[in-house]
Image (cartoon, rainbow, N blue to C red; front, side, top):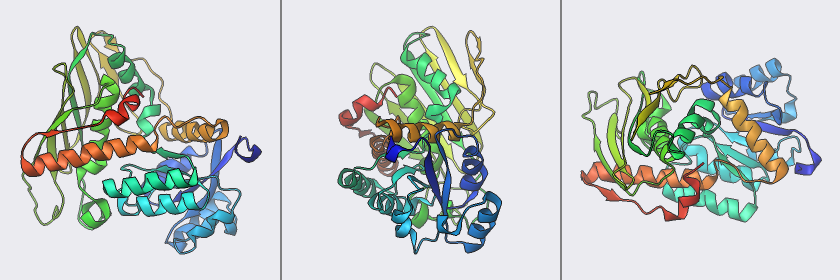
Length: 345
């Protein structure tokens, strides 16, 4: 048990839409953890939520005094909900301050930063978990079960589409210096995840192509859309697409004797599943509450996260290969044997 605690305190780092609209409400439903602190560069936001949530002044931090979080025994976990360019820095600073970390996807901007996070984990001994909420969603877990247990025979083809209309210029996701990439980093990572957890296998080859840009100035320095295929051996393929100029939300598996799918598949709520034998009868959950509760329990009991840092590193290696393939317009081989034990989670 972490310092004899039955419930652990979480500090949210970054007070954007996801933190305030999803994580704060979820923390009102959690059993193993609770909201214990906030970090933001916007003092008006800090004061607003301080008053709304009844937090004390010593639980509020700016980016400048972030490291003093080490002195706050009420905070056990730091949840990084920042632009991608800040993931590595604040994950590492949090662990050096003696705090466990949940980091939103992607793990970091690139493989170099991911390796820096891995080094900090090894040096500090803190636990690190990716913010992969869909691993705790019953519809996605049913897709895992149906695929890995071969309920309809071996899966032969996957169609994985996750795209969204990104909106106007000016947001950080359209700034390559802050995002590190376009929809592949933001939405496409869910397609990569799904392909692996449905098949329980790792891809060995990727083949990608960029979509033609409809607005080159808006998407300067990053892709507007990208299509890629992952090959898994045994003639298993996953056709994927992610775009910032269309809306898509499909996870479909075609197997030897049937099919199963989610549509929508990747949302926070309202997921719907069906198979060639009928509808999935599952109860919806608060994905974020289950995700945070599970990590808190990992720390309390000493068991590893279901979605550890190694999984974030693995996915970044695949993303890097997809970008390389699209740039070269050729297939790229993947060497992921070190991550074999993660493919069935």
